Amino acid sequence: MRSRIRLVSILLGLAMLLPALSKAEGPIPAGARITVVTDQSVSSKTAKAGQTVTGSVAHDVIVDGKVVIPKGSPVKLTVSSVQASGRLSTPAKLYLRLRTVTVGGKTYTIATSSAGRTLGGKGKRDAGFIGGGAAGGAIIGALAGGGKGAAIGAAAGAGAGTAGAAATGKKDIEFPAETKLAFTTRAPITIN
Image 1: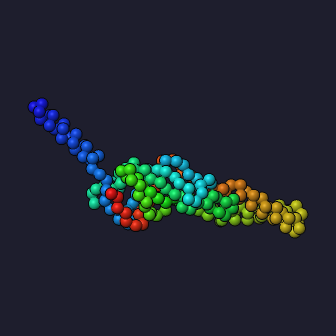
Image 2: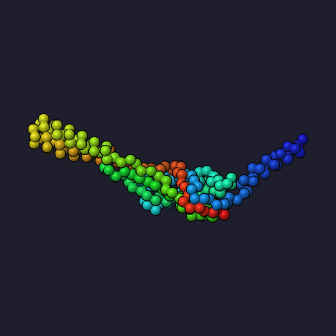
Image 3: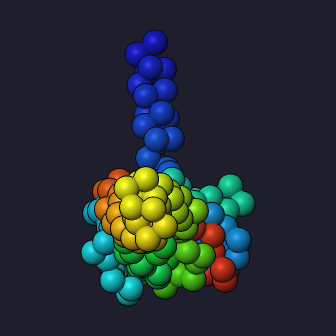
């Protein structure tokens, strides 16, 4: 009885070791999905195009039933496109591209799509602030000083509306550490 338990224990131990002992290798076709987790935060306010961001592979990359890139493999990302939020109509954007992956101590350059986001435009909302301020100023000016007062009030109201839009409209994008981003390979690559 003890010998059977020992044999089963040995076989289970070997079954658990085999995946760790098998070498990750093989081709990755164009169009394969690679999800990574960032190690550091990056923001549209401070990032520069070309800046390197580190991370790791979030899930095993499996091709034809075989792990080609194991979970946890180190990666380097590059800021491919960035724009800080402007005060009025310039929306923030931040995009990263997967540049390299290290598997088994060997680093591979990889071509992928960009992943990130752009905040929606604020033009209509800002126009509402500015137009509403102008209309409100014109009404107050007309009541206070007639036609000339309306013109002065409209200009003052538009200025106040512009200031309000500028004060409330600046929003940047931030990807904190441990943000998951998904990339798609653009060209095949062989891991060996």
